[in-house]
Image (tube, rainbow, N blue to C red; front, side):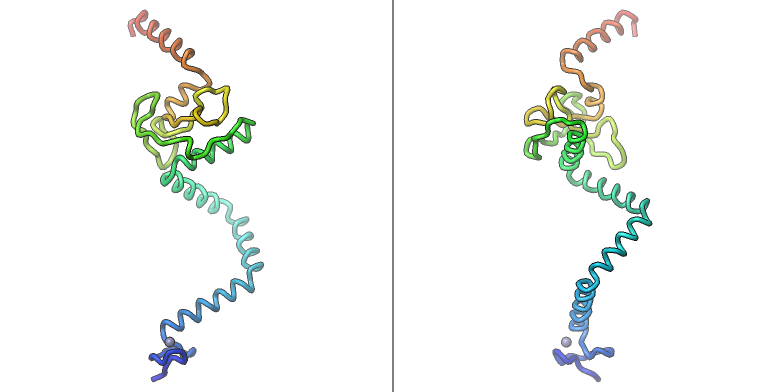
Length: 174
Ligand SMILES: [Zn+2]
């Protein structure tokens, strides 16, 4: 029987360490290796990333979807910030300025965070007035269906469309 040189408990293997101390020793060795080989590890990782683009993209998209499922407001906000920067639109809102309603405030349908792609009932960020940027009070969460329908229009435009459509439906007996 051999014993751990650190604590005297029964030891196995060539290091003369018990199970717990062997684990501690290996963890330390790994830490030292990581510290000494930081540059090598970084280069290896960069090489792996550049030769496994598809896998990296797949993992990235999976991670994004998971983040969206966990905190859709946060991911929507991030995406809006990127869009705003690309299109030179003012962006001054934080997560405090928006909230996730249970139902679309425009279409009154339940909102659902879909895993795969945007559906009619997916939550999206909408600027109430399109002439104004992502500023407090101008941004709400609405269904993708309502957002797509609204586009750049305001309530007067949509009212006009609704009334004319109603008239056409009645007039043509549809
Ligand atoms: Zn020990």
